[in-house]
Image (cartoon, rainbow, N blue to C red; front, side):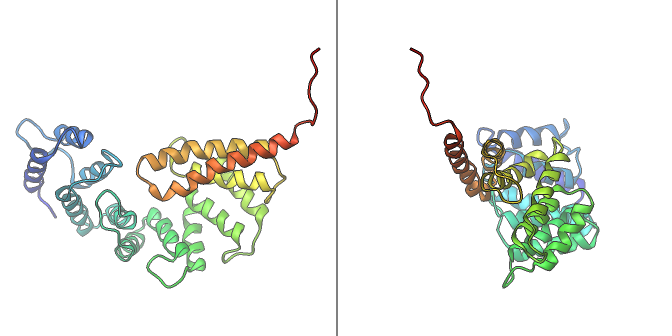
Length: 274
């Protein structure tokens, strides 16, 4: 476990190397956690958590990546399940200068899940759903992990179960059930959760309304859903979640299709104002 004197020395060294113009939030944050003697006033896990959230999506210098990893590893040695999950997430995403390694991500997710982290269980669901670091997806395990999260109020887990019903993965295909689940996600959505999962859910509902999948066709509802999807997905991509770029493009293209469908529903005659 890292002692406070060591952490304080490292923070001071990093602060002296940082370019405040390139990483203003990081620079400001480090300044805020040092007292007049340069002694750090926050705990290692809080420091690591705040550092990975500063200046998104700017790439972080290697020395900062190494320090964040060291902080997480120290907390992991102390049994911190959140640190296990969060370090796994850095390896899963592989952005901002962190190494991408699904093998390491699953290793830390497994460790965190064994120590009671619901978020890690949801993350493992993703790994099994997409077959990360394995020969093929394991939808049965994915469903089991998503179910644990969904029962505990994790809306991302719930909408992924919706995906499994929509596609017939492990469970019997049921488009109507998928539609109900997606709508349930929106009904229970909080302001805090919306930026994380609303975009993908609105995107799915846009397609379902447009083509009548699991519900009746409704081009107007489709257009509204695609517009909301675009707004949320834009923010996600802007913050560095580049894996949603294709989804953002889909939301924009979906609006054009919905508008064309709506245009075809208008009366086929011209007004005469003479």
